[in-house]
Length: 337
Ligand SMILES: Nc1ncnc2c1ncn2[C@@H]1O[C@H](COP(=O)(O)OP(=O)(O)OP(=O)(O)O)[C@@H](O)[C@H]1O
Image 1 (cartoon, rainbow, N blue to C red):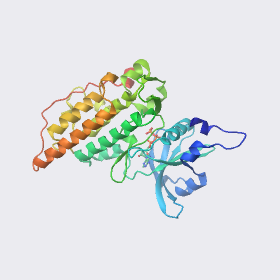
Image 2 (image 1 turned 180 degrees about the vertical axis):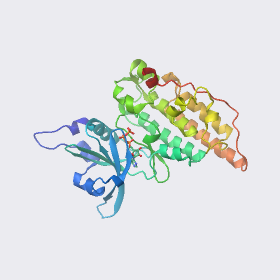
Image 3 (image 1 turned 120 degrees about the vertical axis):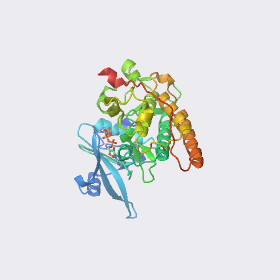
């Protein structure tokens, strides 16, 4: 239904009849050029595989300013542009980035979003400044957003490129899912039938592809659950899975020995036990053995409350983790290499 809205209606010369226009604002290229000082390089806040992202300033009808992020797609990615608008138009959730509007002017394809002043999660993990508690809270928000995508709409949505750079943080460091350009609309909610797709085009940008896709081309919500497990791992270790794998830090060493030095000693054993258990389950080989996002969300809430309880009694000392957890992950994309 939504795709129809992007068809070129040669007779009427109206490119965007009805639905999309009703759901979000269509900006002129002139307005967006003005909002970014003509796409000034100093306004660039991010670069993705398909786009350059700018910080822009628009005006409300009453004349007051508001800040936005503009994703200007590279030439040749109009399908990704359309897909992202089509999906974002359907989403309303505090943990999903909000669409403000778009511009489709000849070769210029631009999406306008609410501005996330704290940028992407990966940058914060690199700096190492997030406390352990804040990290768990962020994971809960992401789990809540994914749960909504999988179960909150009539047809579930599989994000498919979940990673620390597609999780954005607002001014309160509340997480919002972004980067929906390669997401997939699944079967009707409650249908257990996996969707067969050809996602090879995602391969180069994706990386976190689970084994089942490579084996039989099937995509279910459990793809995102697997990617979420890798996000949990990154939140704990502060380092990307690929770097850890290249440095042989996984498989050979327990996760407990790879914990980010900025949070070492801050994790209560009771909290860790619940957290690591859900992480390991998210990374199971068999998709059916991975939990649904609703369960993940509940378990993470539980982990957070155990941390808070432990912090009340333990006011002065660091915590010591005695467990040793080895995670034997096999990514699909590795299998295909
Ligand atoms: N709404 C936003 N507010 C603030 N920064 C943003 C926003 N959207 C994107 N960015 C920044 O731009 C970067 C690239 O965005 P995004 O990942 O969505 O692009 P992409 O072209 O889909 O690329 P890729 O698939 O490689 O991640 C993000 O990591 C983030 O730093």
